Length: 178
Ligand SMILES: *[C@@H]1O[C@H](CO)[C@@H](O)[C@H](O)[C@H]1NC(C)=O
Ligand SMILES: *[C@@H]1O[C@H](CO)[C@@H](O)[C@H](O)[C@H]1NC(C)=O
Ligand SMILES: *[C@@H]1O[C@H](CO)[C@@H](O)[C@H](O)[C@H]1NC(C)=O
Ligand SMILES: *[C@@H]1O[C@H](CO)[C@@H](O)[C@H](O)[C@H]1NC(C)=O
Ligand SMILES: *[C@@H]1O[C@H](CO)[C@@H](O)[C@H](O)[C@H]1NC(C)=O
Ligand SMILES: *[C@@H]1O[C@H](CO)[C@@H](O)[C@H](O)[C@H]1NC(C)=O
Image (cartoon, rainbow, N blue to C red; front, top):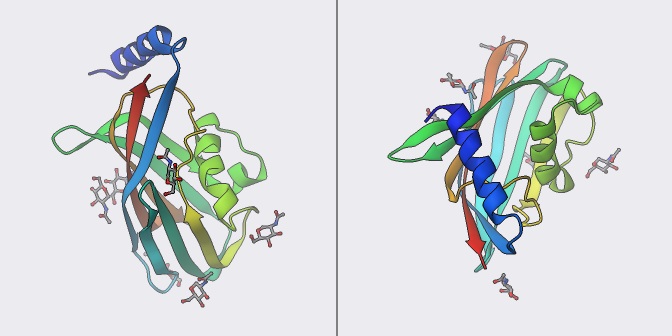
C-alpha cells in the first residue's frame, strides 16, 4: 500500500470511530539493543520484565565512555505482516537540537513515552550512564488511531555520523471498540 493510501485508511478509520468510546492495549513484546562500538558504548542492560499479568516494563542501562556532542537518531516503524515491513514513518532527528528544543511532533510523542522513566532529560553532551527504568506503554498515549497489530520501532543511534547503537523495540497495539 502506498503511504497516501495508508493515511487515507487511517483518517477514515478515525472518522468512523472517533465518536465511539474505545480502549487500547499496548504491550511491549521484545527489545534488542546492540552496541556497534564497545569502546564508545556498552549496553549493561536491555531487558523486558513482566511485573504483572498486564504490565511488562523495559529496563535499559548503557554507558557512554566519551562525552558525545553529535547524536543523530534515525528511526522507523515497521509493522508485522509476514515479517516486518516498513510502516508509514521514517525520521532523521538531530538529537542534541531536539533536546534543546523539540522540533518534531512524532519524536516529541515518543520522547514523552520514555522521558518520565529516564535520565535523558538534558541536551548534549551525553556521557556516562544512560538509564530507562521501569518504562511501560501507557494507554493514555493515544496519539492518533492506528490499526491494531504488531509493530517495531527500529532506531539507529549515530555519534559523529557513524552508527554506534541499534535498538529494536517491538510492541503489540490492540484497539478495542466498546
Ligand atoms: C569507536 O569508538 C571510538 C571511541 O571509543 C572512536 O574513536 C571510533 O571512531 C569509533 N569507531 C567507529 C567506527 O565509529
Ligand atoms: C492490571 O493488573 C492489576 C494487578 O494485577 C489489576 O488490579 C488491574 O485491574 C489490571 N488492569 C486491567 C486493565 O486489566
Ligand atoms: C548501570 O550499569 C552500570 C554498569 O554495570 C552500574 O554501575 C550502574 O549501577 C547501573 N545503574 C543502574 C541504575 O542500574
Ligand atoms: C539502520 O541501519 C541499517 C544499516 O545498518 C539500515 O538497514 C536501516 O535501514 C537503518 N534504519 C533506519 C531507521 O534508518
Ligand atoms: C534529570 O534526571 C535526573 C535523574 O532522574 C534528576 O536527578 C535531575 O534532577 C533531572 N534534571 C532535570 C533538569 O529535570
Ligand atoms: C532490528 O530490526 C531490523 C528490521 O527488522 C533488522 O534488520 C535488524 O537486524 C535488527 N537489529 C538487530 C540488532 O537485531
